[in-house]
Length: 287
Image (cartoon, rainbow, N blue to C red; front, side, top):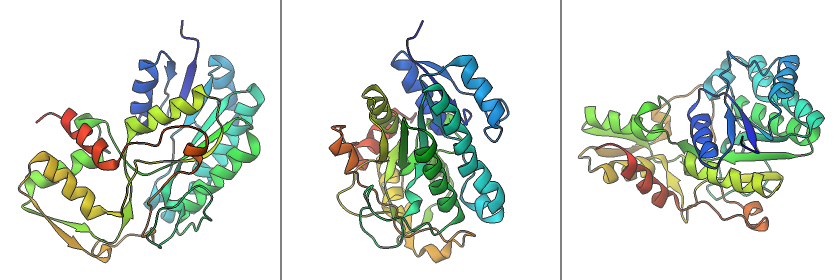
């Protein structure tokens, strides 16, 4: 029987699926209930679940996403913040490690890499609710890891929410794709996130960490899509446009470019360069 076990909330999601696969490959027992199987807004249900399976760690991938948070802030703070309090209280009571998945969206518009010690800005209700969740994790659970992730992709053709395969499908139907040239971030491979998280858990290393593939220069959405199409050998052309061409309910930050001081301080290898990881991922997709 495995010595270590993990409970991954939001088990139907792409990140949860990649975490589950990587944890199982390292010999962990994995429990990954969907939101219908485990309601993280119900503190009693969480405690009962943890007391039943006694996981070594809980990884909270469940979240309300950007646009819905703008439409319903009360629900946003319930799901992205108060529910983290519920998890943190239960984990601390049982001595369980808590991993809270957070976002690169807590920073602002200046185009530069942001590290763990930079002040947050929280331009959107999504970012504000996720940061409130971080605060609850820190305050209520001694053994906590907070991971701020970059622009996540992974899961291949079987995943509805994979950015890469969605762009490939779009390119197959369009000779030209319009992409924002003024929004910057870090394309981040979910499998690389899993490797880093396993290293932190194995080392009993706690705190706030930026977990994104590295970049030596700003990566715009248009750069990201161009790299995807080039790797796929697509003839579709990327038209670089202003993000104002894609109106959104949420005023998302211009820059979500992450770097990590904390991983280096902790002796954990930084994630590979985003272009290297993207090429590796593309090579695994069916052609």
